[in-house]
Structure formats: C-alpha cells, structure tokens
Length: 188
Image (cartoon, rainbow, N blue to C red; front, side, top):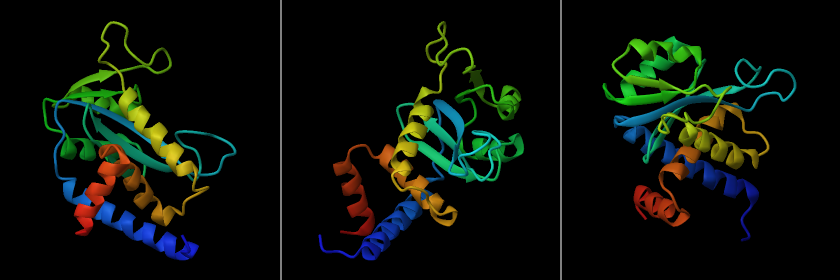
C-alpha cells in the first residue's frame, strides 16, 4: 500500500485507543442472566512455571454473558479481594454464574448469585447439567491468544489496548460489522 510501517503502527494504535474509549463508555452496562467467569494469563517468560503464578505474565479477568458480550479487565492478581469487586459491580444480583474450581471464586457461594462450578481436572461440561460449563469464556481466551500470538510479544504498557481490541472483535462479530461500528465511533 506504500505506507511506512511506523505510520501503519500509529494508525492501528489510534484505532485501539478509539476502541478502548468506547468500550469504557459501555463498561457500566450490567450483565444478567447466565454469566461465565474465568481468568487467563498472557505473555511472560516461557521457561519455568506456566499458568497461575508464572513469572512476568499479565493476569486478565473475563466475564461472558452467554449468547452476549465479553468484558475483560487486567488485574494485579486473581485473589478474591481483587475479583469480587469487579464481579459485584458488573453482574446484577440473582444472576447465574459459572466458574471453574479456583479458590478465589469461593466467595460466590455466599453471595447474591446462583453459583455453579465445573471441575476441569475431571470434565469440561457437567454430564447431568449441560449448562454447567465455561466453554464460552474459554473460547474467547483461545481466540484472543491466537490473535495476539501473531504480534510476537506486546509491550506491557500497551497490552490493555490489544486485549480490548480482542474484546471488541469478539463482541462485534464479522469484520464488516466491526468496520461499521468503527466508522460510527470515528464519525466517518
């Protein structure tokens, strides 16, 4: 296209800033109904421990309204004291929440939510209660990691823009719909 790579990078950075701005405006909308909760880890050094507690990784907490939108937030850790304020500020009381068996979700058992757990070490879907799974949010993590992998590492100071871009793509379906939303947001 005859565009210098630095110009293209700046253009994409500005688009990600627009996405972040508009997703922040939408962040006050509460989720209700059936919501899947999960955390995931991005980046870091490949050697040594993987997953929870791995050095240098960025923890991201996600909520997915079934048949709806996903919401992500970068968190300093995945302890109960960090996750519960996000959960209670983003989900309406009496909603049904689905999680894995991570101990940070124990507080949901005595909260205003109906809480179901799935033990991933045994199964990914409850055979008796087919609704008891977190496959939707796991699908989002898989898509996000696939998209972000192509960047061969993302600077931590800009990672929040990239995860919000993944959230935007997931929530707005087809590329043509994504473009329509971006044009509306940019006033084009």
